[in-house]
Length: 462
View 1 (cartoon, helix red, strand yellow):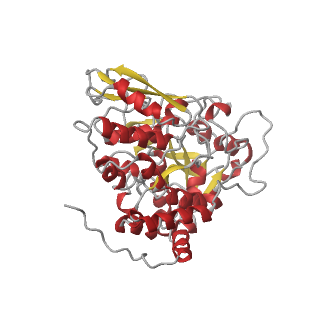
View 2 (cartoon, helix red, strand yellow):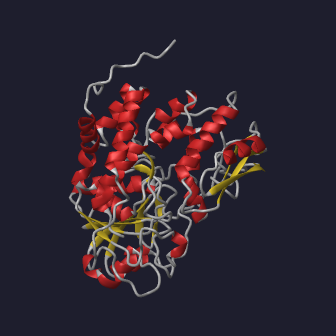
View 3 (tube, rainbow, N blue to C red):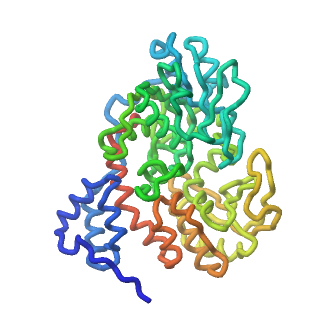
């Protein structure tokens, strides 16, 4: 039975009217919901209009305002934490402060935020995100508050009974400080903790100070769709692109801006920018030591592929957890790795090659207690990035999903969790409808361009 389509309310709109509505209705945009809900792109006429919109918008990756890069003579990037201690101590001196932090909250010497702040302020509480304050707990493991205080300071969990700081956690605090290393992907949950912390600060009338850190996979590339309102969750807390190309400080400004419409938080937020970081910099160019932000994010290379291969968490194909190369090896017992690799390499995707591989996921208590296909030999592909500047993680992830669905139709399955990762039900529907991967990406382009334009005023660095 053919699916009956709703009549589109845009069938008689002039191109200019449609373009104006696309540009102004980013909420994330009712227009996007209506594009998908009515299947506007199903007809040749509307595809032509859509293409005309993209050509006429000509949105480039925006540049920060002149003077936004602070000069730095140290030869390496200074994090917001280091800038705070060197130049802005008056912001915290003598105050009672609650800190949202984890094991990454350190300066280049390895000294922790809590110890450093305790010399100048009274730290009233420590609030830890997913993976815990120590950063060594597996993904998805709910964490209790710690019974033993750290240096006499109570440690609360923001990944247990509560995801947002409570009034009790913030009791007596005059300020909240946020300092956590992110990896640049929407469904990596530290930015969700940032968003919910901002909401809590707004509710309780407490100012928030965000100490900025680099986006490890640069601040230039923006990839994938934005999360749709009906699919927002803790792994997609706000309508931003999968690879958003922003720092945590910039995201805080975006979440708090009037441009974010219904999703604006409305907190009193101040960001301490880094010194010496530019949008084109990769983490290994910053001079800062890499501290794995979570147990299955061991290297910068992992962070680079994660926006694409992380989507396999919503399928019955192993994303490589339980191996030494999580998110770089992808497979299952029923996959023909040689056939899959050959098919993917024939697509000539930029900056990447695929090679057939075999691996056996094992239980690693401190990293992954129950990986997919535990102790079973899996066949699949290894994703090897050959040029990280041209590599497009989300495109690679979508191409891999589509080819797996085509090559192994009797086995391939995806769960509703994929909706949360992608930000809508659309990708899951398209996979089962066997839509070409290029068409899938084409349909996300308007959202991507809208987000690039939306984020412009929140960027702090050139």
